Image (tube, rainbow, N blue to C red; front, side, top):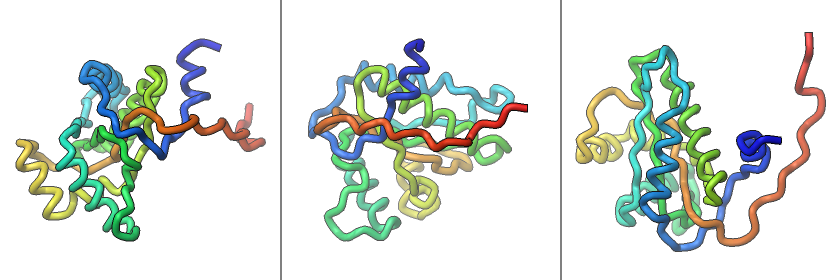
Length: 174
């Protein structure tokens, strides 16, 4: 099995992270992999916001917690120090797929480098809110973007999750 397929088979969502920032060059390499994801007609409709600032990270976590309906004090980012927000230009009819492919590339790249990752939802709701729109505006991001997901990154705190068996009867040859 080649290393790309092995990463696809072995990658698992990590939901417990050490409180240790990743080096910038590691984050940059993961982001670069995301930027090379396939996109409809090569338009590259997705953008990535790399959040390493703890204040903004915690603000996003609290917004996400409220949207998800969890109890106060719960961190839906599981203590991960890095949040890569993937947004995509809604004017492109493939934006949702484009952004999803970016998310997949980010998680596979992270795994291949020994970094834990997890796709956290509710980015759509976050950035449709007035508070989310204000955050994007403060970052100089203009346009009609939809939040596709948050790719949280960090060093796993504990063992990597086990690979579950695959469900049978999911492939049909014709």
